[in-house]
Amino acid sequence: MLWLREVIITASGGGHTGYAVALAQRLAGRVRMRFVIPEGDSWSASKVSSYGEVTEVVKLRGPRDSWVKMLVKAPKAFIQSLKVLPKGSHVFVSTGSNHSVPPALVSKLVRGSYLISIESSVRFTRASSSVKFLRRFADLTVLQWEEQLKLIPEGTVVGPLYEKPEYEIGNEGYVLVTGGTYGHKALFDAVLKAGIEKVVLQTGRVDPRPYKRARPGWVIFRFDPNFGRWLAKADVVVTHLGKTVIDAALTYRKPVVIVPNPEWRLTAGIEDAEILARKLNAEVVKEITPRSIKEAIEAVRGREPPKYRDGAEELAKIITEYLEETS
Image (cartoon, rainbow, N blue to C red):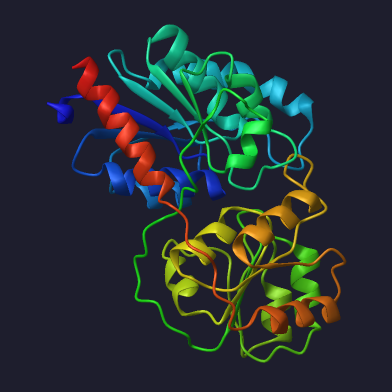
């Protein structure tokens, strides 16, 4: 029985946790699942805990951190992975991020799991570091777009991984602005001066207090585990180059403005954003100013995103077929 087989999935924060949720939604009721999250990441825990057991492994570095921090944390990450990953697991899914690498290696090389590595949906010009490293160990490298075959020729394209809608889609007339887990201060400051009357602002790790003082009529918060409800009712979504772009456009059918964060060292860049924007009928803001933000918002109002095949369902099918063949 498939229910006796276990699938371990990393939920490494931000969009990586979004991939884990999208896959878990399709695997629910078919297999047992366990999730590996960054140490202390209560938001990721809240997103995946309803699907299976949650364990923690320290994350090596954030998007602004140096390689030195990664080297310092690596021994602890491998030791924790050895402790928390069980013997007899059958499939390990890395959803990306350096956080996924230590448990992926332990699962493959020590526990003997079938290793699946997922490339990000926003990568077009160069592969992510974690996928480039894990490709030599992975049994399957999952790509979300045909264009990514130029980066990983041996990869398998399944389509974009996006979450199922959890809320009824509507339009309450507000602009949803988000910078993801770490926030996007340059974007938030520009929106503050853009003269937009109705805004819902998710600040992440950026201090929300200055924005609350300046705009008491806006809805402003750091995090919300039910973030999908804000996507579902938005008029336009303005966000960094991350998985929120995919969920806004493909899960909730919203017009999107993409504003890449120039502070992030480890992420995709402007060219990647432009390619993704063409695929999603979105707009990209290169120079972050109040005027450019407002013009991009007006340009996308009423646009309809295209439809793509369900990559999460396709990956769930690959996993269950593998488990059936090896049971």
